[in-house]
Length: 426
Image (cartoon, rainbow, N blue to C red; front, top):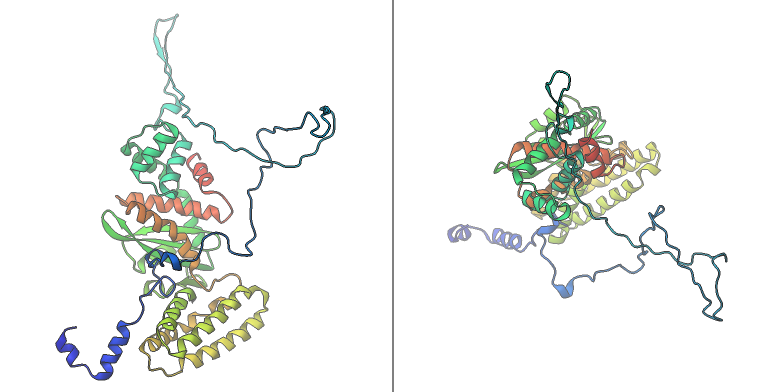
């Protein structure tokens, strides 16, 4: 806006412009910006580290099945100097442990094909090619370790190459590592297809997406999850076609997401993420003196408080509480305000009001926020920041398949590496 534009503004418009310029910048607490973008507080104003007062301490749990037990008993009395025979009863007064990792070295099995001359006819007979000599020389555990470090510890090819060399004494080229990972990723295709099939039968589905670089272009990493399955997928688009292709005509009872247009209209009902709205409300409370954002903040606190104990109430009680919350929200949204920030907030919540309290009709089955999707996307965001994306689409799709199988297995308590090793070795 230039000088001539400013000169044409009225006094009221100039005041409004100055007030807007004085508004504080948005943070992770008042918007969807990640915490890493927040400015760090001055060191003298920062909260002290360490445990907070009243925090219950925790100690490492001793092993129930140690490999070796060494009993240390006294052989002489410290009081009188008398000998203490080994057959005297003793009791354990303390237990301590020393834990060490064994040296890890590759186990190399060399297969030699031998030729033998037949004593009867004189023919030279060569042993058939053993199964172990077909294909890759690397075994399932090595494939699993490399896949785990690349996918879940976000190592680049260079760092993965160094880790395998330093920790295990293995020398692999980056091209060899790429081929190894490509072979391992193929093992997860059937597991991904099974997770997609399970998702397409779910009653409640939540979804979210985040940006990622694939082959030097902007693309997106999507996640869809239900109580029984988690599905990750890479796509060059953020459009609704990704959802339609994933669900293949299945319409769940409830869809959980933010207010992004591409996420709308895929289920009979939609639960809007209240955490997103809470951050918008927090920004309005921090910026404006208008009482409406403050009333909305109190209303949301009541909703979150009810969500924590939603399974403790009968369906009729929840219905009554929902009607009360609806009346309160109607009164807040109908309140006139001269603040443009408040009016925008009222309009946004008004457009989504029929999607705010859906979780009360499905106690325990529908969450009021989409935080579950954001937690599932976080490792992909870290991977993007560390490695700057994927060189090829096959790498993005393959990693999405791995995350799908591993995250689905986590729903039943399986570990990441255990799932990878079981899948690669199958």
